[in-house]
Image: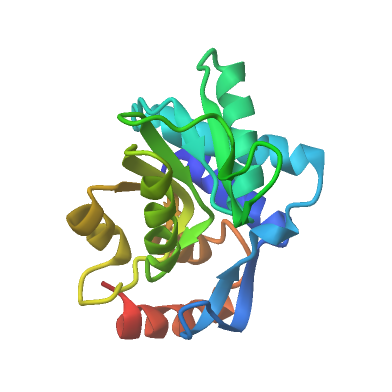
Amino acid sequence: MQQYKQDFIRFMAESGVLLFGEFTLKSGRRAPYFINTGRYRTGTQAKRLGEFYAACYLENKLTAKTLVGPAYKGIPLAVSTAIALAGQGVEVGFCFDRKEVKDHGEGGLFVGAELRAGDEVCLIEDVMTSGKALREILPKLRAEAEVRATDMIISVDRQERGEGERSAAEEAFEQFGVRVHPIVTMDEIVQALEEGTIPGREYLPAMRAYRAQYGA
């Protein structure tokens, strides 16, 4: 496992973002672990988080010049990533959707960088379980402008089945042409537990059982 991936898993655990126990996910599944990006609460955490996302953007040689952060958790993720990329000499814009269309002032559904037909955009999200969040944001984007949503960066790919037997990440590419780039995967989190990179070895049986039930 690459060093920055190990560092990111430690960062999530130390920030109280990577949690182990029993959780009900947005998809309705009961999982032995949970990624709660709402627990990033300081400027230092936001700075480091953006650096990890930027590292993933650069490692995968992405070229999108607009980052889209779906409300609400995607908003600070997109902003911190754009700031970190600027520090690397890569200038990108960012925007995010409102939960409701603004009917006064400048109006519209999106705030930030203007979306234009033909623009290549990269979505910035926290985790991918079933792909539900992606299916919700894509129609909003296409209603705003005929952009090309080519890539998506997420903190963790849970490597679970989406609506069918394939993983949500595989479905994202097959159905929408969106390539999903995780900073880390569930397999890498399990590996970190096995190697003692983070505490929580007692949760390994539950992690493996969950993977056997929902893994793709």
